[in-house]
Length: 149
Image (cartoon, rainbow, N blue to C red; front, side, top):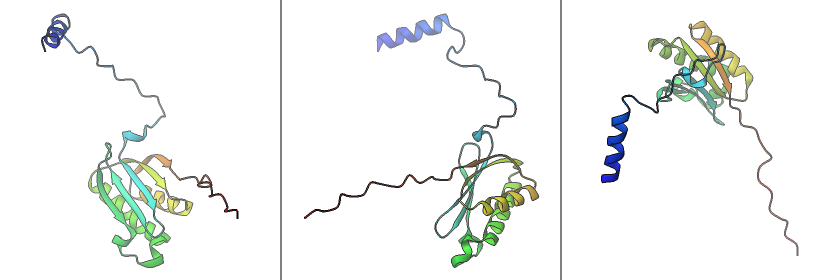
């Protein structure tokens, strides 16, 4: 206990400011960092589409699925579902006075992405960055050995 007190006292005695703080690095021009803007995550299940709006730190502001909007059955994965979902998220973002966003896409169908981006542009949202996080298959696990008799 006494040893730590001596170190703290010596540290305070010789320094009048924070030693360990770093200067803010200037950002490169034309480079958008993923975490600088609020994000819209677009992902799909085998049956449903999900749109999630988060703030800069990653806290969820709103989340919508195609079932919440009113689509049932096979219509949940259709283009009209993407259309109405992206409108709803864009209106919510406008209410929060968000002007620039980055979009994280985890949908394999490219038509969905184009439709959603058009609607974001129509509602006045500027898309700073589009990140594609499409999972790639790696042929799965190795099979079990065949049984020999």
